[in-house]
Amino acid sequence: MTEKAREQEIICREDTPTERRVLGAFLYHAGLSYRRIDLFVDRSHETKRQWFHRLKHLFEPGCQDRPEVAVDETKVEVDGTEVFVWAAVNCETLEVLHVDITPGRSSLDALLFLQDVLQRCRGSPLLRADPGP
Image (cartoon, rainbow, N blue to C red):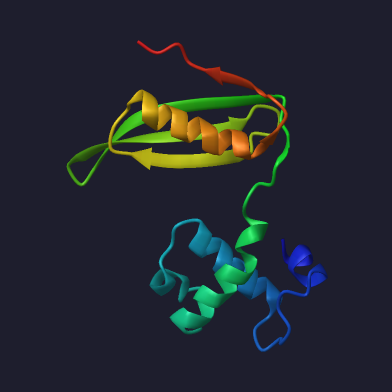
């Protein structure tokens, strides 16, 4: 990712090395707060936010040919509230294509999730899912 950031000349000034900027953006993308990222990259919250918004396209899977996609959902309890976590993975590369969280497990939730997944796929991939209960 660092090489892509350099090739695209996303970051002009080098007061902070590109590797550190990409690391900070990646950690934020992975779910860490700006405050936790301070352990690795000591810059202002606004600076880290700007890095992330400049680099976020590097973390998103693009629209590609994907012959098979596995989708699944599971129920998780978060702070006493049950939610459903949906995930889609490319079967060949094990690349995570999309993750979503919904309060319920309705057909509409599944349809909206699958629409988001299919936007990341070119053509008509085979969707694999467990049969369920």
